[in-house]
Length: 311
Image (cartoon, rainbow, N blue to C red):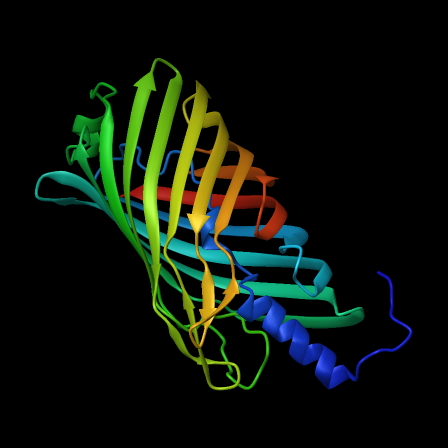
């Protein structure tokens, strides 16, 4: 990365980069970029699952031509511990998932020709996800589940992200967003032999961060997220999927003044699930930004181990 002959003092450079990452909305973890194939499949009631995974991402940030920021690069990883339970609610298959993430990130960039860098690590914001299959997903016990036929599924979910992670308003960059976020979503899953076609439509809503760095208020518009997945089952619990998502919105203001424009981005990826034992499987994922007009343009590689049992 090029260095300017006249470098700004470290505190000044660090302050500028902080506004870049937080004010201009280049998060360490970007929920709108999610790609989750088969998130609404039929599962026997009484199934409990434990998932341990890690995702590494790296890439650049895209700004408009008038921005003073350039050569911005970020690398980050997020380790997740998730626990979920499938149960019956009003005769329909439902589930509850709790995820506890730990994030590590490093950001470098040029601000007005001067280089700056910041890094953080710590607990990220916890997630809670409730889902229900409204059509094609009756609550079935294991003995009943084995004889069921594949059906088109209509499902809904609500994801909540709590401001529970590491946050310090005196620091320029934080792991936590220090705000609540909610995402209602509706999904359609259509089986055709060994093929499965998924389409999800959701909206992220964000609470304002009233304790943004320097005592300011940071607000973000809702983000509309559309996911599509086409997966193929090679044998039970062994499948591959092609994934894509489009997300738009998310313009940021600080104290009511515009800080960054709306997103209009496309992301594509591949996912594979491989059974390693009767109750265990490994999931591998890769994704990359196909179109990034504003925001983070990251390449991501992930692996997750899942253990499931029925009681």
